[in-house]
Length: 246
Image (cartoon, rainbow, N blue to C red; front, side, top):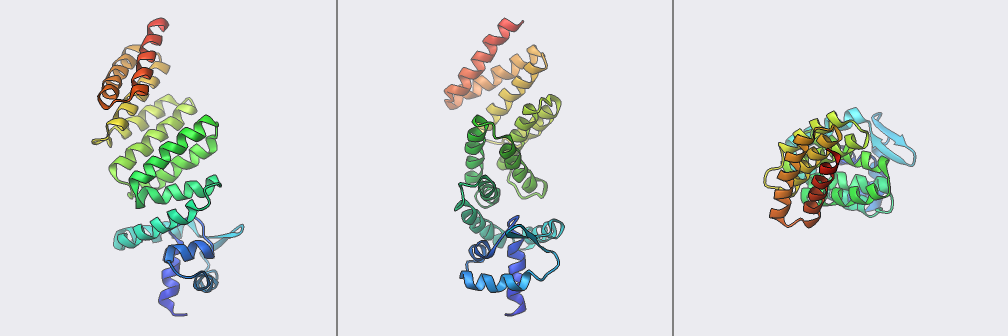
C-alpha cells in the first residue's frame, strides 16, 4: 500500500473523535476491506490510540491535524465531516454517536446542525439528561474555539452554553455567555428573542426586576414580530409573575 494512501487515512481518521474500519471507510468513501487494510497500517503509528473497541488519534495531534486541514484543505475537511456526520447518524439510538454526528453537521451543514442541537436539547432537557446536554454544548464549543463555526452557529452554541450555566445556578457566568451570544445573532430573530428572554430570566433570578422587565418586553416584541406565540406567552407570564413578586 502506497504511503500517500496511508497518510490520507491518518488525516481522515482525525476528523472524528473515534473511528473503526467502517467509519474510516465511510469518511474516505472506499470499500470496507480497503479501509481495513489502511487501519492495519495506521494502527502501528504511536499517536493512534486504542479506545475500547475503537481507535482515536491522540488529542494533541488531532488538534494539529484538524487546524492544518481546516486552513489548507477546507473543502476536504467539509466533505469528510459530512460523511462522518452521516456515518455516526446511522447509530442515532446511541447518544454518544448522535452527539458526534451533530458535531460534524455543525460545520458540514450548520443549519441542520443547529436544528439538531435545538431538537435534542429540548428532548434531553425534558428527560433531565444533563450529561448529554453538557456533551452537546462541548461539541459545539470545540469547533467555536478552533474558529470553525459560522456566526449563527456560534450564537446558538453560546446560547446553550448559557443554559448550562443557568442549570448550575451560575447566573453571572450565564450572563457573560449570553452577552457573547448576542454578538452573533445577526439576522436570526429567534436567537435574538431567546437570548433577550434568557437575560430577563437571569436578571429575575438575581432580583434585578427593573432590568428583567426591560429584557422581557424587548423579547416579547420580537416574539410578536416573528409569530412565536409560545415565546410571547412566556414573556407575558413572566411579567405577570413579577408583578406579584414585587
